[in-house]
Image (cartoon, rainbow, N blue to C red):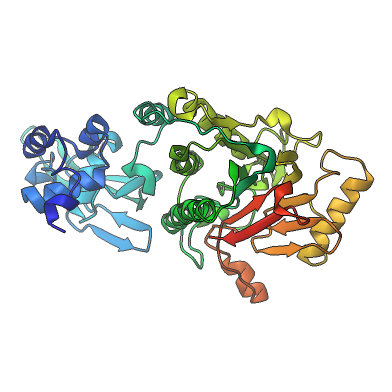
Length: 455
């Protein structure tokens, strides 16, 4: 394959205008927003095909960073600017300072609340007899969110959605059909420094699993499975949070709360959009996880439904509503459909009552199988909203388990996060990441489910 065919810009209808803008030192970020192309694509084109390595610096040569140093880690580090002849303005000057320390501002950013300033005079006076002052700054920098290459805020997502083409919905006979269930659980976007990496690696895993889930669905349809509905079930903890859940959490994350929500929201929308062109009706539902809670002193202090997991699905539903020609066959199940405990949902999948729970409400002690089965047994005795579920799907415990020992099926789904160094150090235990897919319906036979695959 030739270089030009692999380059998004070279084949773009506005290439001439984009090239002219880059040659005149226009901002890559601005061009990204204008033409809907990722900054990384524009940056590669600028370097590989125009021979322009960086945007020209706006600071004068007289402001050389004397004595500057950088300590670099896997996802960021610390910096010291050395002596500056002018004070730096965070909103204006930091991109240039990063460049002078060989850090590309398209990929790195200064963590603003870590910056500390020093100011002193160097003992000499200017022509007016005034002391000449110097400034220096030290602080932390970090890798930008992996989704900084895409539109981040809701307004940009809406624009992206509106550009998507319409889709024709299939008319299907659901009487003998199956529902293809994809469980979205424990992404914990923002979790970093773990055995499987941080946010970058988690995003890559989720996207790879999404592609594999789509391939699996097409494979099942080709083999003769009558798939009449797709259900995405959010089982909680799609974001990590920054504090209130475990020791050292604030130090361990690589994104703040807002960026965690941005990345997770984009991934959720990307996942749904991946399946939309099939034209098969799609239902999207969610239950709240513990990492989505609003906490104070380690405890939830508002309501169970005041939860970032639920809020994320709610916002994505509002975004999809802006393009009914494409997303008219996508139904978002409101959290008003949660059971009376506000923590679980029971939903019918092709004639089978399926219960969804994150799992943080399960009793402590015992193995995973006993946790799920004893909890469901108690719900049945208490005639709660999930009592009649023939199949229970839960997250939280971060590993795969399935049991049919009670006459009902309970499934603990694996997590997609980076794992846990602490848990592995404490117990020696670990389990692989994965996303669970399964066909559910009366037509599946006595088990009422079949074709389970972790992707």
